[in-house]
Length: 499
Ligand code: CTP
Ligand code: MN
Ligand code: MN
Image 1 (cartoon, rainbow, N blue to C red):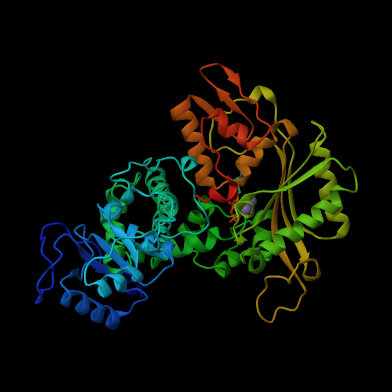
Image 2: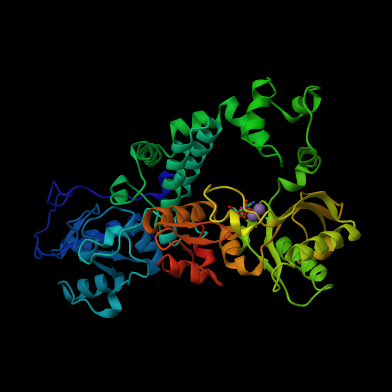
């Protein structure tokens, strides 16, 4: 399954001669061709190889750094370049990457045709380390806030494995090991090309010995033995199951596991367990809230919030944040900022919205947390701590009729509604940009932006503010762009923050 996508990768420089014995006289020593099998097919490739050799061309079967001309029948530049860049070549930047038309021109002429613009398959991808040998490009940063990461993850086969390992370390409270795997996953997610062999990982930051061993296993066999072992272990499976319940964190899950509990029915039948209100709702609505929320459902919730907000005042702000703002198609919940232009009135607005929901009878669970924000608490020294803004964690009843295209529900479900998780936060307007940045995430992006601020700039960034320790002053920001600028960072769009 995994092998099928991999073409023969790079060979080391050691053997300069063509791999296949060439029965024909070589007329053009300085030209060495490689024909890409993808799209061309094996039999046509074999035929064209023989044809070229009979005309005195050197054609190698294996792509190596000795190749001067890569010929492809596939004119979709991005997929070709993505593949080439994943091959770990050192001299890719010196190679001519050409359309089959150059090959036919050459065969017709009986000699290598002059390369014209129309022959070239242009590299449309952003620069990557493999193409940087001659023209140096900026190395990939160890900080996610200096990388652009779309939702299109080309290295899912590796990052999924890393995430299992990271999660397993979190279950064992081995923070630094889990951070290592999260960082490694984040680096691979930012690549515009798929890693196909270990040579291609040269120069990438945050890949340690352990991560590389796992990658090697996956490249060679399609899966990692270590990861398979974790996935099949009773402990991992049980902790994963328990933490999938709203309100159950790793500590509670571990406690239940130690009590010998292995299933939801075990937990619910155990007289010594007192579920809190959050966990009760978690179990009650498990089927619904463990199912993905769609973009259309997120939009529908936005409409409901808009309606509630505009009943009181017109200068309210309702802004989508979280994964959906980053362009994700699905999420585990929906996150909105609800606030007002007038500083100090935001908490009223949030309470009003919750009240409206209650009047409509759509609140299935509501955990309102009033603001604990006070300027004297800033700058906040504990990173990873929750912010001080008024917020509310909800489970709402969403009607099918309110959703464009209908609900995401299981087959045969004809209730006409589903439960969805909604998070609302209400920062005062002068803190809006910081809250928006923090709640847009991703978690890994935020962590790295804070780490960057601390390590590189002697600044403290959190969901409320940015503090410059050298100048001993707070740096105001009314937009996310302002925050990036204060930190001397290039602006990264929300949909490029899927680190
Ligand atoms: N967040 C936060 N403070 C909280 C809760 C969340 O700053 N009290 C931030 C998280 O750090 C994250 C963002 O809000 O960056 C969104 O959190 P969450 O909904 O958990 O994750 P998403 O990225 O939206 O992923 P999903 O699509 O699965 O919901
Ligand atoms: Mn979310
Ligand atoms: Mn959330």
